[in-house]
Each structure stands twice: as C-alpha cells, then as structure tokens.
Length: 412
Ligand SMILES: [Zn+2]
Image (cartoon, rainbow, N blue to C red):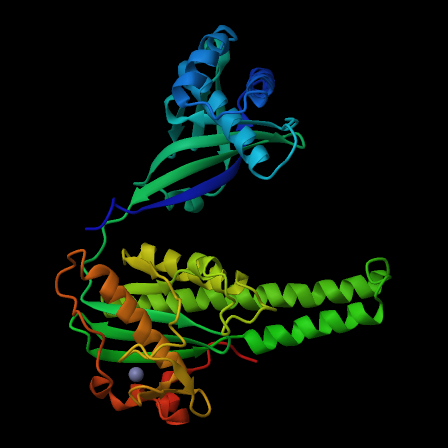
C-alpha cells in the first residue's frame, strides 16, 4: 500500500432552523467574526508566518476570555492565519470580514441524522439546537461516514450549515491496469494485465468539436458587437445561451464518461492511470494535443468525474507525468513523427501506431517504471512490445479501432 489510506470528503450543505430564538447564534457568529478580525489585525503586521504553537500562545487566553470554548479558539486563530496567508499569497490587502460565518470543530457540535438535528455549542456555554431542512435521502448517503467539521453561516436572513463528511476507502486489489488518455477528439482507454499484456481497448469521442462550434458563435457575436455586446440585452442573452450549452454539454459528458470508465475498471478490477494535469502545466510547454482554446478545464472536469466514480467503487487512481506520452516511442523512446492520419512512426526503430493507443502505452510504461521500483508486486518491468499488442491496438490508421469499440458517447 502506498502512502496513507485515501479518504473521500464531501460537504452536505443544508438550511438549518434554530429551535426557539436565534439571538444566541447570531451573537456567536458576530463574536466569532470579530475575533477572527482581531487576530487578522494583529498578525497582519508580523511578516513571518507564525507556528500553531505561537498562535496558540498569543491568542488562546484572550479568546477564551471572550467566552469561546477551547476548540472555538483554535478554529479562530487557524482560520485567521489561513486568511492572512492567502491574502499575502496573492498580494492582496488585509482581509476585512463582513459575512457571518464560523467553522466549528466536531468537539463543539452534536449531529443526529435520525432526528435531523444539530446541536451547536456556543460561547459562554450556550447551546442552540437546529433542525436540518433537507430530505432524508440526501442525508442517508452519509450514514456510516464520519464528520469532523462544519461551517455555519447566516445569509440573507437564513442559517446554513455545511457539514464535512469523511469516509476512508478500502481499495480493491487491482488485477489489471487501465491507462486513460484524453485528447481533443478522443478519450482512449487501454487495459493491461499486471504482466503488461493488453486486454481491452476502448475509445470515446469527446464533444469538443461541438463545444468549439458554440465558442466560435460567441466570438463571432462579440466581434460583430465589439464594444456593445455587454450592454445589448438580446446579444448578451445569445452569448449566455451558447455558454450554457457549453457547460451542460461538458458536464453531461464528464459525468457519463466518469461512470463508464469506472464501471469498466470495476469489471476488470483495474487500477486507473490518469495524466497529471498539474505536471502538464509545470512542463511549461503547451502540449500540442491540448487545444489552447479549450484550456485544461474540460480535462480537469473529466478527470474529476473519473476519479470520483472510481473512488465510489473503491478503485485506486494514480497520476503520472504526461510529458512525452504523445511524442515518444513506447518501444525505444525515440522521437515519433507523423506517419499519416492519426498515425505516428518511430524514426529509430520503425514502430508504427495509432497516436491515441501510443499515448496509453506510454502512460502504462510510465506507471510501470515509476512504481515497479517501489515494490508493487506483479507489475511487469517493461512496457509491452509492439508485437504483443493485439491487432486491434496496433493501429493502422482507421483500422486501429473497430466500429464496435468506437463509442459515440455524445449525441450530436
Ligand atoms: Zn522506437
């Protein structure tokens, strides 16, 4: 097992109705906000970052004197410190708090999912009971999860709580490895046995072309009304409508794809390999396959859904640096050159393959070289040799994919 047990964290945000008067709760929220502000004001002038211990030493007694419980005090200075850090991090001004919101540690509340009530321990030993306004079904999902913190807010005359739930994941022992490659036109996934034998290949079309059409419409409208598009209602509406289409197309796609990939991975008991999109940014180069106009947001969204659905099924997800996965030969590491429609050829050893399939082979190879050294048993040290690749994967132009494995996820 690598690292610590992975955990899933989810927030449940619900409206909450105080039983009886809400005066004490409002008083608590004001006191809390002012206390956070007081800490912010005092550490803003200190240039070094204070340790938790220093913060405790500086503020604990004062906060307790104001009526806060021990864990309230801790939450107050930790939150103030994080506000100051992030304001400094982006060169901002000293934070000024206006909203009424408080983080509450699990020692300072009692949550009862059966009666749908929440009891908060406030300042000066006051308590308030709140009824959670939501359906049983929404809450049912979190039975068996632990919860460790919540945020209570007062917004437009209503109280809201976000409760943070956590569940550790008992991962399934993988029997295969699935590499997932994302690019402009396709999402390609390839399943390998632990000894590196490819057993399954599937390709899904992305909705990028469709999304691009909407983008082009937006740009066309903006060009036609370069200065005024923001101010003419009809024009602005038209732009918004295209924007909404883009958002719904991509969310819809990401959800469906996440489920499909995870279902297949569960069927094959796969560990899933994804490209590390953060690394892609660090590499500094814009990988050719990531169309600049679309940016990384779409890939992030797809990955988010794949990861989410994988975790729901207790499947492990690993990310590898995508550098070179679409430009290096999976057999010898030589540079690949265009060899026809969607086909790449290695100048050094003559390997020829479909570009998406090559990317999955390389992702698999990266995973193997990264983890075989760390003692993951049963994983082959070498990426599959091209002659071991079944004919469907070898990729001779369009033949690389049989019609049946080419699923159009997305209806145009
Ligand atoms: Zn080669």
